[in-house]
Amino acid sequence: MSSATSRTALVASLVAIGTAIYTTGPLYRARTWWSFDDPLAADWFVIGVQAAVGAVALAAVVRFGRWRRLDRTTVIVAGALVGWLALGSLWSASPSTTLRESLLVGVALLAGVGAAAAAGDRLLAVSAWIGVHLGLGWSAILIVLVRPGTQFESQWTGVYFNPNSLALVSAFGILLAIVLLAMIATRRIELASPWRVGVMVVVSASVPADLWLISGTGALTPLFGLGVALGVAVIAIAAQRSIGAASAHPLEGRLVAGVAGLAVVAIGAVTWLTRERWSSAVGRTGGFSRRTDMWEVALDWFSRAPIVGQGYLGAWSDPEFTAEMLAARGTVLGSTHNSFVELLLGAGLVGFGLAVALYALLWLAAGTRALADRRITSVWPLAVLVYVIVEHLGETLFVGGQLMVATTGALIVVSRPPSSPPTAPTPPPTGVESVVGERRS
Image 1 (cartoon, rainbow, N blue to C red):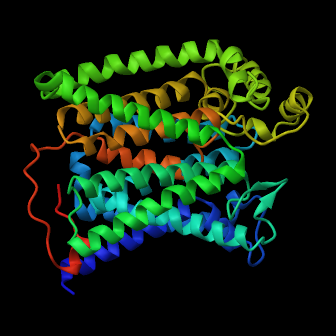
Image 2 (cartoon, helix red, strand yellow):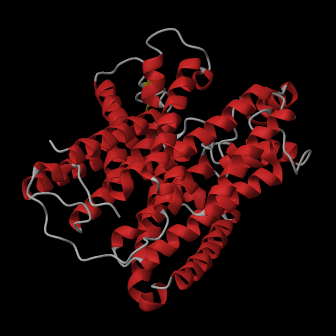
Image 3 (cartoon, rainbow, N blue to C red):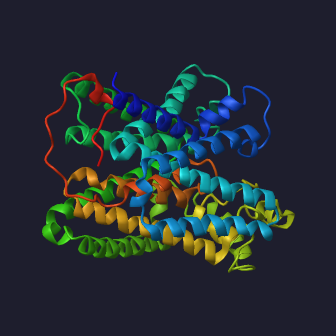
């Protein structure tokens, strides 16, 4: 095996393991094999593993030098967001919680940046798909064997402890599978013929398997996020064909992406205002499992400190706040189940504005790439970004150790338009090395 192949295999393995760690389920489940601190998110071993991943990611960013390609404004905004969240520990009801989660969010962003810097677009997609399915495969086996802790109130949890987490990872696995199949079909990932067929069969088979896992959870938000992400991808591909030369220039593509982003926000606002009407059609109430009850309490507390917030995730340690949550919903869940509401509550308008700015910059970058690069596979960062944002709207996922935060970090790297125009595909290699190898972009 050549040194280049060995290095590629090492990078793929590290990214896959890191992805599995950031789906939280496998790491948390393994930690329960011996004594642990409750909650697991604050366990010293879990934090230590995440810190180690961050250290490896930092080394990758420096070693592979792709930090030079990062958009400086996006990096500054991301750094400012993490710094502001950490600063909130000065006025938080739980300074340790705010500081810990803020720093671990920064580590997760760094982990994503490092993975993308080391792997590049194609190997990143392959490795992430493998990493996601390490936990999903483990979950499927335990569910079939009816192991304790993998089902909860007739809903499947697998190794993820709750149905929503299992569904989120499963839907993300489907999205990655579609990305991989598109890359293989268009020869963005070059495989020798025997490997090509085998890999496509395995990846294709993972889609119904992941749908089966979602069906046992009863969760609809990840499927909705997946549908929106794929819908945006189809629209972007159609725009590639219809806009043509106008989108080839980065400034033109950025303008189109910006206008499209404003249209998406407008559609989202209309969807929210009419939620009572359409939600009943899909068997849900306008309260979204009484999430809006929590949001009303959170927004009321946000209004008490609108600029700086209550300290990120710190309000949940305030007895008065939890008492109001208990009165409003009948139970205290520990988060508002909406990352943006949580940011308003904990980080105020400053933190919320920085988060919105971060995702807006990523939208512009991913949208510009989707329009400027004529290959259909260029839309995948935009599709993944849409999935992340939709999931943020239904769950509090902007926390330490969360895959969606690490994915945001990876998007900072891969959303950038290519520095050179695409070249014609070369004939596929014939060696086994092509299974994990790829040309660097």
